[in-house]
Image (cartoon, rainbow, N blue to C red; front, side):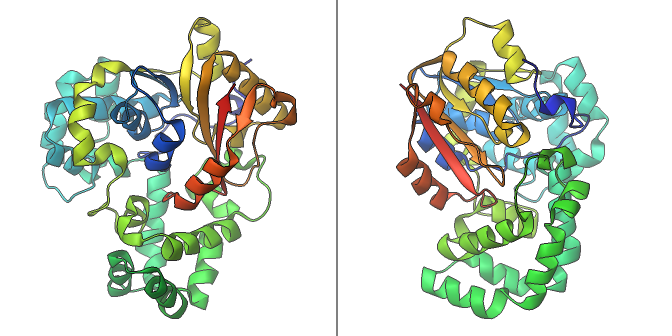
Length: 365
């Protein structure tokens, strides 16, 4: 079975220069034990590397887009060559005037193809490799052109300082959630604008309901129910840097563990379907599936889910996100796959990457 999205989406550019899915809830959901083997969507590589930090013995990262794998390959080289502080500069989490020099130090560790890819993108390196994707450019337009029409830098800084819940709700109600915020938000995060500037339009093929209204409600959750001070995704959207809040793979306490275990990660430019056909004997104890089921029909979702359960060890867990396409274990698989609804709901409430409508965790019997 070939990949459905591969027939529709454009994979000629970096779509995501960062992983926009919360690795904290991912790693808790998968509960990877030492010795576990993980199958992971690569994206930009952050969450595949976070799985190493959480104890995975081996991580197989897959992506159909070679540009995404170039992001992962450069990160691996950076973990090998740079200090933690220098890694944050190269990614763009911290200000820097020496990113080109940092890249040159990593460059000899890249294969010919990846080196050529990044050599051709000096501006992306200067800006920080975490800003190089189409989705990050979309957020940059929001930050630089839309947000200033609604909130000044002082108000943004006040939001990101954080506070207790009662203060956050008061600030959101009285200072942040004005008519201009709601109006511009609904336009900018509409399916049409997001498809033109952010995600591939084909990613919305099975979407139900209003994308903007959903994201607006989830944004309120992120600003009120969660503390903005601790949210690296929110910090990047509003400031273009991570500030003091870092995703799991970029935290100092994870850096040395990831660096020591880089030989335990491999990556391939393939769909999951093609990889499983090529490696029929593989068995996995954890699956980071990102939001790939958003992009396929219910029939193809169920077919791939059946394949994944077929290569899973007993007790293996699958984790994936839904934005506006409801995907969860079908009744026909209830005898093989348990829906961990209570865990899923608890982690979804904690999800700092707040765009998603659902986070699904399921366990193989």
